[in-house]
Length: 264
Image (cartoon, rainbow, N blue to C red; front, side, top):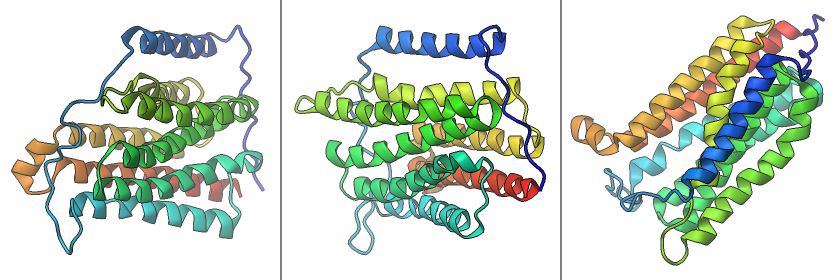
């Protein structure tokens, strides 16, 4: 069985590591500087609010099935094939797919009945998936020890950031999103830097991470252009966002399967 080379060391003199730490510190300071960040007043006013079969916001609910399909496929292969890239950190993959499954459920409930409380059920699983993927990339490309040390504190921060938004959102509707934004912003910036600075022994699978990030950024653009896409296609940008984000999760899954097969 071919083994992966050990993760690269993260000594303090490594300028790449220093740059990653500096970026994290700067993002944390910017979060404090621009805090509070409020949700748009029309956040719950989605373009496609059509009801079908008694289900309000039908397509925004239905398109969450993509997350469930990716999650169940990943969990099935994870538990039946016993293929893990780093066996001692397989829990990060479990958390990633579980996060996607909970995102499917939470987002479907939220779009069925949009509101602050159901939005919590949507955002916590998203935080779990983001942080788990971040931990996977750190473990594979940078340092397994660092990934294992940071993932649980970061998961705790992610859950607390969502709860902090909710507590500050009631009853005035002016919750502070700044801590939660950092949950997505840090991985989106750090992951491509880590992939570039610390190349993998399997460059083919690294491409899947980059493609997944690109697809997720397209998903965020579709979310912003919700109304415009709906007026153009009759299919809302928010529904498209769900499909693109699920596709990003699928690319992470494909990359894992390719690398796991080659490892074994």
